[in-house]
Length: 248
Image 1 (cartoon, rainbow, N blue to C red):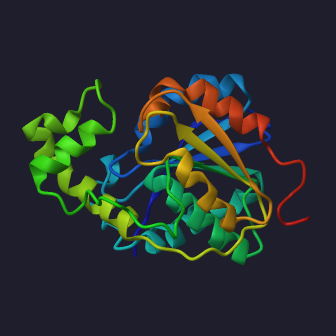
Image 2: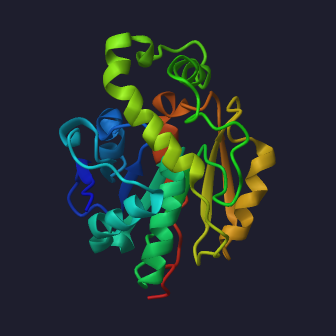
């Protein structure tokens, strides 16, 4: 049984909303630690998921499928789902969607769902990265954010982390899920220079909700989040639903 973790970085008293961030393949909870001051200023509780195999969970058993990871996260997130906004980036977007499906099936939907830089779950991956050899995989990851430092170019670091990154890319790239429309809107976040998720890919998400999609665009490449944290968190607050998905 896998056991993902949940890190809380801000917890203002009586915060009306909790945002739970689900990182990209290879991403750890600590990537979002410096979002804390912005979240605190917005009166938002900020949490980030720690996947098995990362940081303090480095030796923990990893998930064999995205569904297995999603089912484990339902237990971690579900006790406060009604005040939780799920925000998933890249692989985390697919995972956030799947967690939402499981929560809805339990009549315990989250407050809102935000999906970033993520294809719709029924769409194939044109050029999967997880099948590349090590050198090509490192190069491909660097191309996702040209001009920025690629930590995996450090051979010592790659020796420790590349297998983990490849494993999670496999989870994302092999995941398929047929449209089962959710009873809540889906907010989509798109980076203008991201070749992995473009305007042509947006409409495929329409089949996954009965409440419509809302698109927010950001400048930058696939890993735009590091420069857009304030914009993203404000967008979450500004797009909170006025009615509960459960109707309660």
